Length: 486
Image (cartoon, rainbow, N blue to C red; front, side, top):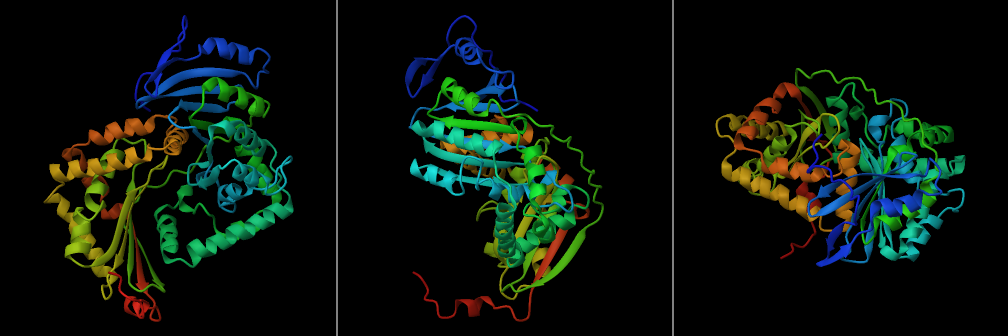
């Protein structure tokens, strides 16, 4: 793990001077306000300062409570808004067969009744202050966030602490959310061709690792969950020592830590299970599956085994992906969509997982193009890399596009909080996005050529071929009766 800069040491003899919004202000001396905050605090609630980390032109201040709760703060006083994130180190990778989908179900349950808040009260209180809220669950993490006016921070801290420690998990609440999630699975996976294909790609590509099962879970597992399953999960994973609070915006560390200590300080830590997963066997031959689905044209999904986010090859593989598939001027997009007219849609990405994932490629064929023809066209372009490797111009264009996307993601306090929380949870480095940007910029054409040879091997890939069912509507019939827009 590499940090973007060396950790800064807190001042000992005088207050630090920092620039905020073009004016110079004197920051509170950490030892003075922390000593006062901890004067009457219990061991569990005591706040310890950890080394700060540079985050571009800003600084991530880091603290930890005695119960293990991490608190990361970036002060940004340009607008009277705050983004408050809570990241938990639990996702579908922490589940096992027979209990898949529990992390995702819990994301739904967390918006329900607590000991001190009747059902619906959480959302109504946030709406009353003009806050927005949502949550997400994925393979390695779950997070919840609120974007709010900075003068309402105390309310959000109290609400989030309440549902971390006092969630009600009785049968009515659990059964109701099981029904919601089951319907979500039907809509997003079972009745959706793309959802079905993505699920099958990972199920086929991974035989042992938990990335084999979908984040939403298998239907039989979803329908079988009990309140006791949920209580065990809550007690195990939704603990302060498995969480990180990330706050970016119009806030000061002393004010925030006083609120966090007050509301989270007496929550007990938990014994977090050691992460032990079966090692995924090396894939030595291509795996293929074929589906017949009610889709107007053929579809294709290909997944090459790719390295973990922390691996040194990940940046170069990401640049290769962008050069091949990123936008209308990308090499494979031109060959299959613009010039070759084999596909109408093409997308690709390299999984940003804690463990090795997939370099995923998805394509939708033009009307009348067989799925095998589409696959042959893709293979032709990928084989061509050995003769015509990525050029310097393609490398520069790809890095510029990746950099633009990265910088756009940091424009808002919510975007910065999300980046900090993600890299803190997945890599243990809250400034990991800054480190990654530097690594992307340093990628050379030689690096790209090397990873193309190392990872784009048929023996290391999984292919899902989707053919239209005979009774599927074609694109022409779907468009009949519609007026062409100018």
